[in-house]
Image 1 (cartoon, rainbow, N blue to C red):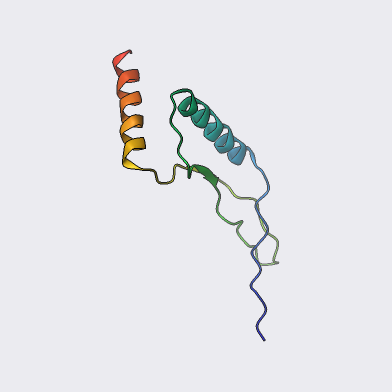
Image 2 (cartoon, rainbow, N blue to C red):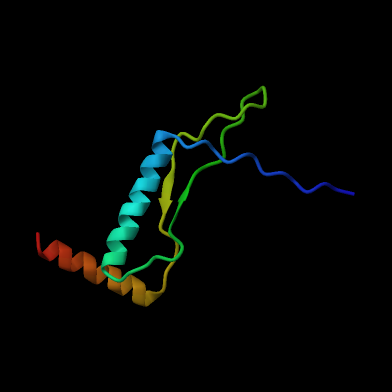
Length: 88
């Protein structure tokens, strides 16, 4: 009988991770204000690096993954970006 593989523990929240979460939240709020939602947007972090003694170091970076969205959402996002760029 095989045992299910265990995932490593989630990384601890670092300043870089918090920065990515804050950026995610700011973009989500700005998009929501324009009526746009990216349904798969989330923060991704790598699994912590394992040191020789089995201890895990916190992730050194985090990424805001914008995910995938439908063509109408992409067109709406492009329109909002164009209108914002035109007002500068």
